[in-house]
Length: 459
Image (cartoon, rainbow, N blue to C red):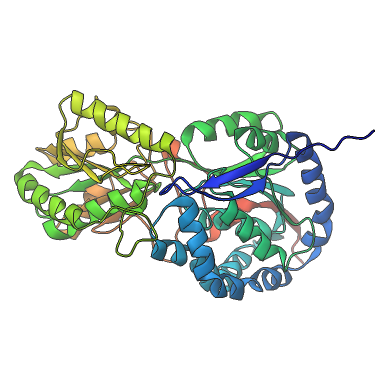
């Protein structure tokens, strides 16, 4: 008599309604070494292709992301909760820029000649081997894309472990690419922490991770035994400094929208706002007016700007921080309470201090925390009083002066009178405990490749 093992399933739930969206089979931990072995078997033929050939295979998926944008955008919204236009936009963005981005990565990986009076050298950028890509739930197709694409173009094979909160849209992403990739080049592992840890400990050569600082530390420790290469984009606690000559309506609009966008579930969400006391009253009124215009509700409802927390656990974490801050003296200027299900009202807290968890630990929820300052030196010291260093912003009327303040901030990316993102070709980089390695730009793309230096005498 033979028995057949029953494979467990992972169910994805709509955070706005609690209803199941669908399910995928959980990858048994004992099967993960075989998954990685298949990736290694596929490696020689994939790396043997030229950069142009790999780009051609990958870019062939472009029309699918565009043609299925509405369908997959709805899946993304139902699974993660963000407003439907943002879900559709996230899917289609993978298609719109796919060819150009893949070509940009390939250009960064082209052999680079160097020469001096005696030596002729060429730098080559070869694949590491098998890449474990571990992605979060807040941008559940854009984040896998940011890890998988440079790894594949560089000639690595990839095993993706998406968040257990959003497995369906990640599976759809892999399925689309796999219509054009050889077997074994891109595979997916489903599950939670146990699967992630098993993948990190498996026979992989590179670990590319986007997620929390705590998990990043665990990955770095686990990778140390084999000195595996790692690229880690970790959490943030982004500050915003509003100088007394700032355009108050523009600054308040950015502060409010960037605090509440994607229900605050963004790594570069504005989580700490420092405002010159001279303009604090006017700034507060402007923030409240904008917050009142941001409708809370299901992502599929028309006009909704702020959706639910991805899970009850995330909701409870956000509410604990808010309640703790209020107990310690913070004032609720707007919102502050839970709603039925996984919803948290967009909340503005005033008079917060650095003794409160909400100003020290990542919130990842729709909470804008405001603290006033007397001097710019005080504002800079407060903004830098954190182990995080992903993004930051400074708003001021005298842009040259605002740049001077921005140069004193300990963040990887700082925006002056704008968000922290740089011009095309800029890296996405965190400082301090917000990053270990980085993405994008010529240098960022090269972190997915092994540099080899070949030299000979100059004739």
